Length: 400
Ligand SMILES: NC(=O)c1ccc[n+]([C@@H]2O[C@H](COP(=O)([O-])OP(=O)(O)OC[C@H]3O[C@@H](n4cnc5c(N)ncnc54)[C@H](O)[C@@H]3O)[C@@H](O)[C@H]2O)c1
Image 1 (spheres, rainbow, N blue to C red):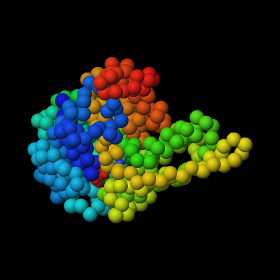
Image 2 (cartoon, helix red, strand yellow):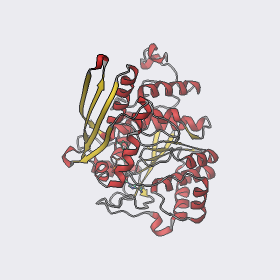
Image 3 (spheres, protein in one colour):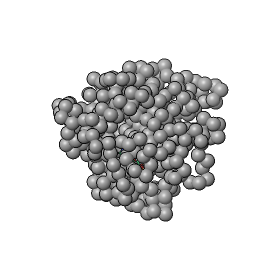
Image 4 (cartoon, protein in one colour):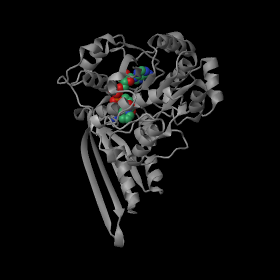
Protein backbone atom coordinates (compact mmCIF):
# COMPACT_ATOMS: atom_id res chain seq x y z
CA UNK A 1 0.00 0.00 0.00
CA UNK A 2 1.24 3.53 -0.78
CA UNK A 3 -0.44 6.28 1.25
CA UNK A 4 -0.70 9.60 -0.61
CA UNK A 5 -1.58 13.13 0.46
CA UNK A 6 -2.42 15.64 -2.29
CA UNK A 7 -1.72 19.36 -1.90
CA UNK A 8 -3.92 21.37 -4.29
CA UNK A 9 -7.13 19.63 -5.23
CA UNK A 10 -7.69 21.08 -8.73
CA UNK A 11 -8.02 19.52 -12.18
CA UNK A 12 -4.89 17.36 -12.03
CA UNK A 13 -5.82 16.01 -8.59
CA UNK A 14 -9.36 15.21 -9.73
CA UNK A 15 -8.15 13.25 -12.75
CA UNK A 16 -5.56 11.46 -10.63
CA UNK A 17 -8.01 10.40 -7.91
CA UNK A 18 -10.76 9.37 -10.33
CA UNK A 19 -8.39 7.65 -12.79
CA UNK A 20 -6.74 5.53 -10.07
CA UNK A 21 -10.12 4.44 -8.69
CA UNK A 22 -11.40 3.54 -12.15
CA UNK A 23 -8.27 1.45 -12.79
CA UNK A 24 -8.83 -0.28 -9.43
CA UNK A 25 -12.39 -1.08 -10.46
CA UNK A 26 -11.21 -2.54 -13.77
CA UNK A 27 -12.96 0.15 -15.83
CA UNK A 28 -9.85 1.62 -17.48
CA UNK A 29 -6.65 0.58 -19.22
CA UNK A 30 -3.66 2.43 -17.71
CA UNK A 31 -2.89 4.35 -20.91
CA UNK A 32 -0.82 7.45 -20.22
CA UNK A 33 1.02 5.82 -17.29
CA UNK A 34 4.55 5.53 -18.72
CA UNK A 35 5.71 2.47 -16.72
CA UNK A 36 2.40 0.61 -16.69
CA UNK A 37 3.75 -2.08 -19.01
CA UNK A 38 6.49 -3.06 -16.58
CA UNK A 39 6.26 -4.91 -13.32
CA UNK A 40 7.33 -2.71 -10.39
CA UNK A 41 7.18 -3.66 -6.69
CA UNK A 42 3.95 -1.60 -6.43
CA UNK A 43 0.98 -1.76 -8.75
CA UNK A 44 -1.36 1.12 -9.51
CA UNK A 45 -3.95 -0.61 -7.34
CA UNK A 46 -1.63 -0.17 -4.33
CA UNK A 47 -2.07 3.62 -4.41
CA UNK A 48 -4.35 4.96 -1.71
CA UNK A 49 -5.14 8.68 -1.53
CA UNK A 50 -5.76 9.32 2.17
CA UNK A 51 -6.38 13.09 2.20
CA UNK A 52 -6.18 16.26 0.16
CA UNK A 53 -5.45 19.86 1.11
CA UNK A 54 -6.69 23.04 -0.52
CA UNK A 55 -7.33 26.67 0.42
CA UNK A 56 -10.31 27.30 -1.88
CA UNK A 57 -13.15 27.71 0.60
CA UNK A 58 -15.68 26.22 -1.83
CA UNK A 59 -14.09 22.76 -1.54
CA UNK A 60 -12.34 22.75 1.87
CA UNK A 61 -14.22 20.34 4.18
CA UNK A 62 -15.87 18.56 1.24
CA UNK A 63 -15.11 15.05 -0.05
CA UNK A 64 -12.99 14.51 -3.13
CA UNK A 65 -16.07 12.89 -4.68
CA UNK A 66 -17.80 16.28 -4.37
CA UNK A 67 -14.78 18.09 -5.87
CA UNK A 68 -14.58 15.68 -8.81
CA UNK A 69 -18.33 15.96 -9.53
CA UNK A 70 -17.95 19.73 -9.59
CA UNK A 71 -14.83 19.83 -11.78
CA UNK A 72 -15.00 16.96 -14.25
CA UNK A 73 -17.04 16.26 -17.35
CA UNK A 74 -20.44 14.80 -16.45
CA UNK A 75 -19.69 11.86 -18.79
CA UNK A 76 -17.09 10.58 -16.35
CA UNK A 77 -18.58 8.30 -13.75
CA UNK A 78 -17.13 9.36 -10.37
CA UNK A 79 -16.40 6.33 -8.14
CA UNK A 80 -18.37 6.44 -4.88
CA UNK A 81 -15.33 5.25 -2.89
CA UNK A 82 -14.06 8.85 -3.14
CA UNK A 83 -16.84 9.95 -0.76
CA UNK A 84 -14.71 8.84 2.19
CA UNK A 85 -11.68 11.03 1.46
CA UNK A 86 -11.78 14.67 2.56
CA UNK A 87 -10.19 17.98 1.58
CA UNK A 88 -8.63 19.78 4.54
CA UNK A 89 -7.50 23.37 4.87
CA UNK A 90 -3.89 23.96 3.84
CA UNK A 91 -1.33 26.76 4.06
CA UNK A 92 -2.14 29.66 1.73
CA UNK A 93 0.71 32.20 1.90
CA UNK A 94 -0.88 34.15 -0.94
CA UNK A 95 -0.61 31.45 -3.61
CA UNK A 96 -4.11 32.26 -4.94
CA UNK A 97 -3.64 36.03 -4.89
CA UNK A 98 -5.02 37.57 -8.08
CA UNK A 99 -7.31 34.59 -8.77
CA UNK A 100 -11.11 34.86 -8.52
CA UNK A 101 -11.20 32.36 -5.63
CA UNK A 102 -11.93 32.95 -1.94
CA UNK A 103 -8.92 31.52 -0.14
CA UNK A 104 -8.00 31.11 3.52
CA UNK A 105 -5.04 29.25 5.03
CA UNK A 106 -4.42 27.77 8.48
CA UNK A 107 -1.46 30.14 8.98
CA UNK A 108 -3.94 33.07 9.04
CA UNK A 109 -5.11 31.83 12.45
CA UNK A 110 -2.03 30.01 13.72
CA UNK A 111 1.04 31.76 12.32
CA UNK A 112 3.52 29.82 10.19
CA UNK A 113 5.28 27.80 12.89
CA UNK A 114 2.10 26.43 14.43
CA UNK A 115 0.63 25.86 10.98
CA UNK A 116 3.62 23.66 10.04
CA UNK A 117 3.30 21.75 13.32
CA UNK A 118 -0.45 21.36 12.82
CA UNK A 119 0.18 19.79 9.40
CA UNK A 120 2.79 17.42 10.82
CA UNK A 121 0.32 16.40 13.55
CA UNK A 122 -2.40 15.70 11.00
CA UNK A 123 0.05 13.71 8.88
CA UNK A 124 1.00 11.69 11.99
CA UNK A 125 -2.53 10.30 11.74
CA UNK A 126 -2.66 9.88 7.95
CA UNK A 127 0.85 8.36 7.77
CA UNK A 128 1.57 9.37 4.16
CA UNK A 129 4.45 7.86 2.20
CA UNK A 130 3.99 10.46 -0.53
CA UNK A 131 3.12 14.16 -0.40
CA UNK A 132 2.21 15.47 -3.80
CA UNK A 133 2.38 19.20 -4.51
CA UNK A 134 0.07 20.28 -7.34
CA UNK A 135 -1.15 23.65 -6.10
CA UNK A 136 -1.60 26.66 -8.38
CA UNK A 137 1.64 27.91 -9.95
CA UNK A 138 3.16 30.51 -7.64
CA UNK A 139 6.03 32.91 -7.56
CA UNK A 140 9.00 32.54 -5.21
CA UNK A 141 12.78 32.34 -4.82
CA UNK A 142 14.76 29.34 -3.62
CA UNK A 143 16.14 29.24 -0.05
CA UNK A 144 19.62 28.47 -1.45
CA UNK A 145 21.18 28.08 2.01
CA UNK A 146 20.45 25.71 4.87
CA UNK A 147 20.83 28.69 7.21
CA UNK A 148 17.79 30.32 5.62
CA UNK A 149 15.71 27.17 6.08
CA UNK A 150 16.76 26.87 9.70
CA UNK A 151 16.05 30.56 10.30
CA UNK A 152 12.55 30.14 8.84
CA UNK A 153 11.86 27.13 11.05
CA UNK A 154 13.26 28.72 14.21
CA UNK A 155 11.52 32.06 13.80
CA UNK A 156 8.33 30.90 12.14
CA UNK A 157 8.54 33.84 9.80
CA UNK A 158 6.94 33.49 6.41
CA UNK A 159 9.40 36.16 5.18
CA UNK A 160 8.41 35.88 1.52
CA UNK A 161 8.39 32.08 1.38
CA UNK A 162 5.85 30.42 -0.85
CA UNK A 163 3.19 27.85 0.09
CA UNK A 164 5.11 25.10 -1.76
CA UNK A 165 8.24 25.87 0.24
CA UNK A 166 6.22 25.75 3.48
CA UNK A 167 4.74 22.38 2.48
CA UNK A 168 8.20 21.09 1.53
CA UNK A 169 9.48 22.05 5.00
CA UNK A 170 6.48 20.45 6.71
CA UNK A 171 7.20 17.23 4.79
CA UNK A 172 10.83 17.27 5.99
CA UNK A 173 9.69 17.81 9.59
CA UNK A 174 7.27 14.91 9.21
CA UNK A 175 10.14 12.73 7.90
CA UNK A 176 12.27 13.69 10.92
CA UNK A 177 9.52 13.08 13.46
CA UNK A 178 7.34 10.33 12.00
CA UNK A 179 8.09 8.45 8.77
CA UNK A 180 10.32 8.78 5.71
CA UNK A 181 8.49 10.55 2.92
CA UNK A 182 8.75 11.46 -0.76
CA UNK A 183 7.69 14.98 -1.72
CA UNK A 184 6.73 15.26 -5.39
CA UNK A 185 6.77 18.79 -6.73
CA UNK A 186 4.68 18.98 -9.90
CA UNK A 187 4.77 22.77 -10.16
CA UNK A 188 7.41 25.25 -11.42
CA UNK A 189 8.52 26.51 -7.96
CA UNK A 190 12.19 25.53 -7.35
CA UNK A 191 12.10 22.71 -4.78
CA UNK A 192 14.25 19.89 -6.23
CA UNK A 193 16.26 22.71 -7.86
CA UNK A 194 16.88 24.34 -4.48
CA UNK A 195 20.18 22.90 -3.21
CA UNK A 196 19.30 23.87 0.36
CA UNK A 197 16.06 21.86 0.28
CA UNK A 198 17.83 18.86 -1.25
CA UNK A 199 20.49 19.00 1.54
CA UNK A 200 17.78 19.42 4.18
CA UNK A 201 15.96 16.39 2.75
CA UNK A 202 19.17 14.32 2.83
CA UNK A 203 19.51 15.17 6.51
CA UNK A 204 15.81 14.50 7.19
CA UNK A 205 15.39 11.05 5.60
CA UNK A 206 13.19 12.40 2.80
CA UNK A 207 13.38 12.52 -0.97
CA UNK A 208 12.07 15.20 -3.34
CA UNK A 209 11.21 14.81 -7.04
CA UNK A 210 10.80 17.94 -9.21
CA UNK A 211 10.32 20.43 -10.61
CA UNK A 212 7.27 21.00 -12.84
CA UNK A 213 5.70 17.98 -14.50
CA UNK A 214 6.61 17.58 -18.17
CA UNK A 215 3.42 16.70 -19.99
CA UNK A 216 2.12 18.57 -23.04
CA UNK A 217 4.29 20.10 -25.74
CA UNK A 218 7.57 20.33 -23.80
CA UNK A 219 8.47 16.60 -23.82
CA UNK A 220 7.60 16.47 -27.54
CA UNK A 221 9.89 19.44 -28.16
CA UNK A 222 12.66 17.81 -26.10
CA UNK A 223 12.48 14.63 -28.17
CA UNK A 224 12.41 16.52 -31.45
CA UNK A 225 15.47 18.48 -30.34
CA UNK A 226 17.23 15.17 -29.62
CA UNK A 227 16.35 14.03 -33.13
CA UNK A 228 17.83 17.26 -34.57
CA UNK A 229 20.96 16.83 -32.47
CA UNK A 230 21.43 13.15 -33.43
CA UNK A 231 21.24 14.02 -37.11
CA UNK A 232 23.34 17.17 -36.80
CA UNK A 233 20.54 19.28 -38.18
CA UNK A 234 21.25 22.82 -37.06
CA UNK A 235 18.20 24.38 -35.42
CA UNK A 236 17.73 28.01 -36.51
CA UNK A 237 14.84 28.78 -34.17
CA UNK A 238 11.93 27.24 -32.29
CA UNK A 239 8.51 28.62 -31.48
CA UNK A 240 6.30 26.66 -29.12
CA UNK A 241 3.18 27.82 -27.39
CA UNK A 242 0.14 26.56 -25.53
CA UNK A 243 -3.23 28.17 -25.08
CA UNK A 244 -5.67 26.66 -22.60
CA UNK A 245 -8.92 27.41 -20.85
CA UNK A 246 -8.44 25.86 -17.39
CA UNK A 247 -7.58 27.59 -14.09
CA UNK A 248 -3.91 26.74 -14.48
CA UNK A 249 -3.79 28.83 -17.68
CA UNK A 250 -5.84 31.55 -16.01
CA UNK A 251 -3.22 31.68 -13.22
CA UNK A 252 -0.50 32.05 -15.85
CA UNK A 253 -2.06 35.31 -17.04
CA UNK A 254 -0.53 36.75 -13.83
CA UNK A 255 2.94 37.85 -15.05
CA UNK A 256 5.06 36.53 -12.12
CA UNK A 257 3.50 33.08 -12.41
CA UNK A 258 4.07 32.96 -16.17
CA UNK A 259 7.72 33.89 -15.60
CA UNK A 260 8.15 30.86 -13.29
CA UNK A 261 6.74 28.54 -15.95
CA UNK A 262 8.88 30.05 -18.71
CA UNK A 263 12.00 29.42 -16.62
CA UNK A 264 11.24 25.73 -16.26
CA UNK A 265 10.36 25.27 -19.92
CA UNK A 266 13.18 26.88 -21.85
CA UNK A 267 16.22 25.22 -20.22
CA UNK A 268 15.79 22.30 -22.63
CA UNK A 269 17.13 24.06 -25.73
CA UNK A 270 20.71 24.74 -24.62
CA UNK A 271 20.88 21.50 -22.63
CA UNK A 272 19.85 19.19 -25.48
CA UNK A 273 21.30 20.96 -28.51
CA UNK A 274 24.47 22.20 -26.83
CA UNK A 275 23.81 25.71 -28.19
CA UNK A 276 21.10 28.20 -27.46
CA UNK A 277 19.00 28.34 -30.64
CA UNK A 278 16.69 31.38 -30.53
CA UNK A 279 13.42 30.24 -29.03
CA UNK A 280 10.04 31.32 -27.79
CA UNK A 281 8.71 28.56 -25.52
CA UNK A 282 5.89 29.78 -23.33
CA UNK A 283 2.38 29.15 -22.22
CA UNK A 284 0.98 32.13 -24.07
CA UNK A 285 -2.62 32.49 -23.28
CA UNK A 286 -5.95 31.76 -21.76
CA UNK A 287 -9.13 31.19 -23.76
CA UNK A 288 -11.96 29.81 -21.67
CA UNK A 289 -13.82 27.72 -24.33
CA UNK A 290 -10.71 25.56 -24.84
CA UNK A 291 -11.26 24.22 -21.31
CA UNK A 292 -8.76 21.61 -20.15
CA UNK A 293 -8.02 20.55 -23.76
CA UNK A 294 -5.28 22.95 -24.67
CA UNK A 295 -4.13 23.97 -28.12
CA UNK A 296 -0.41 23.43 -28.68
CA UNK A 297 1.63 24.50 -31.63
CA UNK A 298 5.25 24.34 -32.61
CA UNK A 299 7.36 25.63 -35.49
CA UNK A 300 10.97 24.63 -35.86
CA UNK A 301 13.31 25.68 -38.64
CA UNK A 302 16.63 23.89 -39.21
CA UNK A 303 19.52 23.69 -41.62
CA UNK A 304 19.96 20.41 -43.42
CA UNK A 305 22.59 19.00 -45.80
CA UNK A 306 23.84 21.12 -48.67
CA UNK A 307 22.80 24.35 -46.99
CA UNK A 308 19.04 23.94 -47.37
CA UNK A 309 16.44 24.84 -44.76
CA UNK A 310 13.56 22.63 -43.59
CA UNK A 311 10.57 23.56 -41.48
CA UNK A 312 8.55 21.43 -39.13
CA UNK A 313 5.03 22.36 -38.01
CA UNK A 314 3.19 20.57 -35.23
CA UNK A 315 -0.27 21.38 -33.91
CA UNK A 316 -2.52 19.53 -31.48
CA UNK A 317 -5.23 19.58 -28.84
CA UNK A 318 -4.05 17.86 -25.66
CA UNK A 319 -6.04 17.04 -22.52
CA UNK A 320 -3.84 18.89 -20.08
CA UNK A 321 -4.55 17.58 -16.60
CA UNK A 322 -4.96 13.85 -17.44
CA UNK A 323 -1.50 13.95 -19.09
CA UNK A 324 0.00 15.16 -15.82
CA UNK A 325 -2.06 12.75 -13.71
CA UNK A 326 -0.81 9.72 -15.70
CA UNK A 327 2.81 10.64 -14.95
CA UNK A 328 2.01 11.18 -11.28
CA UNK A 329 0.79 7.59 -10.98
CA UNK A 330 4.37 6.48 -11.68
CA UNK A 331 6.00 9.22 -9.64
CA UNK A 332 4.03 8.03 -6.61
CA UNK A 333 5.25 4.46 -7.12
CA UNK A 334 8.83 5.64 -7.71
CA UNK A 335 8.71 7.77 -4.57
CA UNK A 336 7.85 4.70 -2.52
CA UNK A 337 10.60 2.69 -4.23
CA UNK A 338 13.13 5.44 -3.36
CA UNK A 339 12.03 5.42 0.30
CA UNK A 340 12.19 1.61 0.48
CA UNK A 341 15.78 1.84 -0.76
CA UNK A 342 16.78 4.62 1.70
CA UNK A 343 17.45 7.06 -1.11
CA UNK A 344 17.37 10.62 0.26
CA UNK A 345 17.80 14.06 -1.29
CA UNK A 346 16.69 13.89 -4.92
CA UNK A 347 16.91 11.45 -7.85
CA UNK A 348 18.01 12.89 -11.16
CA UNK A 349 17.01 9.77 -13.15
CA UNK A 350 13.40 10.18 -12.05
CA UNK A 351 13.32 13.97 -12.47
CA UNK A 352 14.94 13.88 -15.92
CA UNK A 353 12.06 11.87 -17.39
CA UNK A 354 9.07 13.31 -15.56
CA UNK A 355 9.99 16.96 -15.02
CA UNK A 356 10.44 20.06 -17.14
CA UNK A 357 13.23 21.39 -14.93
CA UNK A 358 14.84 18.30 -13.43
CA UNK A 359 16.65 18.78 -10.12
CA UNK A 360 19.25 19.09 -8.68
CA UNK A 361 20.09 22.61 -9.83
CA UNK A 362 23.32 21.52 -11.53
CA UNK A 363 21.46 18.91 -13.63
CA UNK A 364 20.86 19.27 -17.33
CA UNK A 365 17.73 18.48 -19.25
CA UNK A 366 18.06 15.55 -21.64
CA UNK A 367 15.49 14.38 -24.15
CA UNK A 368 12.72 12.28 -22.71
CA UNK A 369 13.67 9.26 -24.84
CA UNK A 370 17.19 9.23 -23.35
CA UNK A 371 15.79 9.89 -19.86
CA UNK A 372 13.33 7.01 -20.19
CA UNK A 373 16.05 4.41 -20.74
CA UNK A 374 18.19 5.91 -17.96
CA UNK A 375 15.18 5.59 -15.65
CA UNK A 376 14.76 1.92 -16.54
CA UNK A 377 18.48 1.39 -15.79
CA UNK A 378 18.09 3.08 -12.39
CA UNK A 379 15.18 0.78 -11.58
CA UNK A 380 17.08 -2.27 -12.74
CA UNK A 381 20.07 -1.37 -10.54
CA UNK A 382 17.66 -1.32 -7.59
CA UNK A 383 16.17 -4.65 -8.64
CA UNK A 384 12.85 -2.86 -8.79
CA UNK A 385 11.75 -3.77 -12.31
CA UNK A 386 11.19 -7.17 -13.81
CA UNK A 387 10.18 -8.63 -17.12
CA UNK A 388 6.67 -9.88 -16.97
CA UNK A 389 5.63 -12.08 -19.87
CA UNK A 390 2.02 -12.01 -18.71
CA UNK A 391 1.78 -8.26 -19.22
CA UNK A 392 3.16 -8.71 -22.71
CA UNK A 393 6.27 -6.54 -22.66
CA UNK A 394 8.31 -7.42 -25.74
CA UNK A 395 11.66 -8.73 -24.59
CA UNK A 396 13.59 -6.35 -26.86
CA UNK A 397 11.97 -3.43 -25.07
CA UNK A 398 13.65 -4.55 -21.88
CA UNK A 399 17.04 -4.93 -23.55
CA UNK A 400 18.32 -1.45 -22.76
N1 LIG B 1 -0.53 19.23 -17.62
C1 LIG B 1 -0.77 19.87 -16.51
O1 LIG B 1 -1.91 20.04 -16.14
C2 LIG B 1 0.40 20.37 -15.71
C3 LIG B 1 1.68 20.18 -16.19
C4 LIG B 1 2.77 20.63 -15.43
C5 LIG B 1 2.55 21.25 -14.24
N2 LIG B 1 1.29 21.44 -13.78
C6 LIG B 1 1.12 22.15 -12.53
O2 LIG B 1 0.25 21.45 -11.67
C7 LIG B 1 -0.45 22.41 -10.88
C8 LIG B 1 -1.92 22.04 -10.82
O3 LIG B 1 -2.52 22.14 -12.09
P1 LIG B 1 -4.10 22.09 -12.19
O4 LIG B 1 -4.44 22.11 -13.63
O5 LIG B 1 -4.65 21.02 -11.33
O6 LIG B 1 -4.49 23.52 -11.57
P2 LIG B 1 -5.83 23.95 -10.83
O7 LIG B 1 -5.85 25.42 -10.82
O8 LIG B 1 -6.99 23.23 -11.40
O9 LIG B 1 -5.62 23.38 -9.34
C9 LIG B 1 -4.76 23.93 -8.41
C10 LIG B 1 -5.43 23.74 -7.04
O10 LIG B 1 -4.51 24.18 -6.04
C11 LIG B 1 -5.25 24.88 -5.05
N3 LIG B 1 -4.31 25.69 -4.28
C12 LIG B 1 -3.77 26.90 -4.59
N4 LIG B 1 -2.96 27.31 -3.61
C13 LIG B 1 -2.97 26.34 -2.67
C14 LIG B 1 -2.32 26.18 -1.42
N5 LIG B 1 -1.50 27.12 -0.96
N6 LIG B 1 -2.55 25.06 -0.71
C15 LIG B 1 -3.40 24.09 -1.16
N7 LIG B 1 -4.05 24.19 -2.34
C16 LIG B 1 -3.82 25.30 -3.09
C17 LIG B 1 -6.28 25.64 -5.85
O11 LIG B 1 -7.35 26.08 -5.03
C18 LIG B 1 -6.70 24.59 -6.85
O12 LIG B 1 -7.74 23.78 -6.36
C19 LIG B 1 -0.18 23.79 -11.47
O13 LIG B 1 0.75 24.49 -10.68
C20 LIG B 1 0.45 23.49 -12.78
O14 LIG B 1 1.42 24.43 -13.16
C21 LIG B 1 0.20 21.02 -14.50
